[in-house]
Image (tube, rainbow, N blue to C red):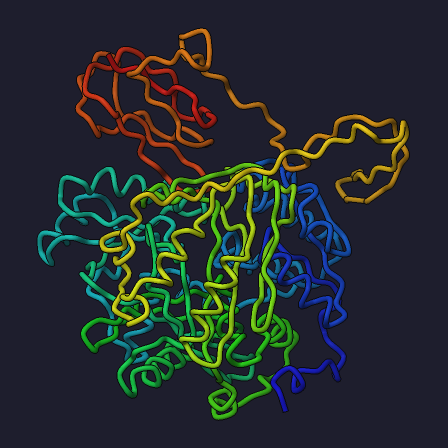
Length: 602
């Protein structure tokens, strides 16, 4: 009998209405699982997400207001108010945002609302990457050398690097997914790197504590998916390899982790379960390990559902979101460890399709409208996304367009099928990482499992590769009737309703367009084509977080001019010519568009 059959809804569920405190692909994923279980769902949305797919799919939707994550999806007071007004008896946090926020979990629990995730006490210990290392030690897992307390300042990090050797890694204590993570090569880089890591962590997770650990030279990133219940049972579902990364964010994930020596996967699984049980963990979670030279080290635990969870689902036929919901309802796990072990079959690969221009390895954020999106199909192919054609990728949120997940009877078949599916996938209007994904899958190092977490940035040749696709021409309605039926939305006391109306034909504004106008910065040339040759331009839409130079300062080629945040990532914009800074046209906090002039160098 399959795991899905074992989880058939034969018992009355405790949870009657789930609010998803998230957006995009993961919100859609949870809504679909809940719908299959017969549970109504509530979506929440910012001003920029009024007509997003997750909003359209949910049974109800409530406005949070604001545009940025801080103004909406991680605004605690607003979120708690919406939860109360919606009448939801449970909240699924997805990943990111509130998913590893123990204070939020405690707050909704105090309201009598179930948090579909681990207990706050386990999150306190395991979401904090420092205390999770201590829990791993109690569970008998080896850890990477590093601090077991938050870094109080740059001097502590410098002292650690001088003692243990450079490079070192500064990491957000309450983060994940590479956000708030900076690799530091020398003592001179620590101050700026720590400040940048804290800004990113604060922006994405609402907290800015960081710690430091040794940075291994050529490791693989291998993790264990597990699930526990409230009765104390815990099983590990599968291993995953997530070594193909750029900027410490994953591009390609696969399950099971290939090429491990005999017994290592089992040892990792057992160590992960012990660490989880040490803190009374229940719900879905992932323990991450670094593997190098035959040894593995505990890295951290993600106390949430991870982006790459579908590859574990594909090789076991276990719906992890369904398991999360049932565990939150108080049900026991339906399978023993032996049954899970027997359920694994074949190989699965997940490709994260991000809105980034590969730009020969620079991976520049590429927000904007998706003019056309056509997912692939076929045997063993799944595409999870929060977008449809015509939707917009905002600079204020994560840049994940969708996840291509493929299953094959073995790794070779899975790779070939993934390449075929990527060739069929159409994303137009924004640049994507698809060209880099194909380069990874076709490379002999990847085929032979000889890549590491540094391989994409240090070895993979992306010369001449960019991610921009040809944009589709906008459709026109020249032959439309004088009166047309239009679907729109209205809000009554912050609750969303869909309505239809017959209106005169008029040009429609994209639902994903930013509500606030960006600040315009004059180029000083009087026209878009007359920019001085010494101008420093924004490569993409974003927000200026720091200006690094002053007027009159001499700069060399490659010198940093400003730090630009786009899609929750900080990008240093550098001078392309040597000279003297004649004019600075932006200040911290300004929002700029692609091509806007930031400074003039003469």
